Amino acid sequence: MNSVVPADPMNHPASHAAATIYLVSRTVDRLSEGRRIAALMVSDCESDTSKAVRGVHPDVIELAPPEGKERIGIGQVRDVIRSAQFAPVQSDCKVCLIANAEGLTIEAANALLKILEEPPRGLRFILLAEHPSDLLPTIVSRSRLIRVPIASQTQVVARLVDAGYESGPAQWIARLALRDGELDRFLASPADIPQVLAKTTTELSKIDVPGLIDACFADDPVLRRQALLQVLKRMASHDAELLTVGVRMLAAQTRESLAHLFHDLLGLAFDLVRSAHNPSSLADAMADQTREAFEPRQLHAFCFALDEAHRSLAVYGPVEGILLSLFLASEGENHDG
Image (cartoon, rainbow, N blue to C red):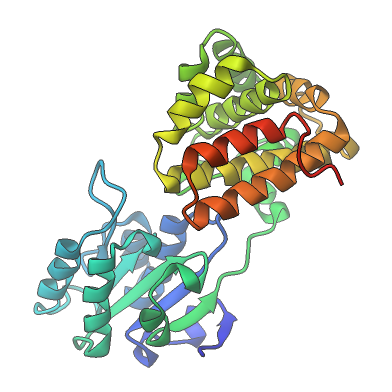
């Protein structure tokens, strides 16, 4: 079994293996992290590094699901194989970056495995995943494993403060469940967080359950968080429309989307528990209202129910049944101990 070592690409040259799997937390911006690692492999100068980090280096192939799709297909892997026939443009090697390696279809993963069994000269692979079990065991066995340390909240806050945020908003942003590229957006264009919060909360107060469910999957991380808080609040009040219309809408989502939703809800629930004892310096009326809607014991029980729902989803239990059990658990019927 491969050993898991600290993430330091400079101490583990690409020449040691055709593929390296970086194990990352869900909170890591995978695309940015992958580009940074790729830059170390293909860059001999500052200009090359900048190109790789921006995703425009000619020798870095970024393999991601096509627009409108959720999986990486076998045709895309075959395109990478064909590209390996051509020499690198600026570097000594080419790098194929797969920032969401779990997105490989079985056929694509098997095609990748064949490449790793007889790797083309000068082609290296960077795969990012949360856990080795998310990938084919045969791919894992032919790759180097490197665990990427989770960036501390202190580090994230420091970056935000350097970008121009005050301490309170910076700490609030650092607690968001951010996805690929979202932290970079906050850093590139500092926002007036109190104003954004107030505007978002007003918008959400005017929408129906279908609009609320759509907002839970929004690209805007602030809107997504506030919508999830609204869902938690409605669950605590046993909202009938959420239990009927909401469950049907959620059941139509992909399992991957629901897994993200459960993860974000669990993070929010724990954040509500923690903030009750350590309140933020940034006023967040929606968070306060949501926390007050739950009894402390009920919120802890709901965290257990969310964890159970996430595990049930992973073993392909019936989606609608999982959702109904979760929503009913908010009434305190389960996990009373």
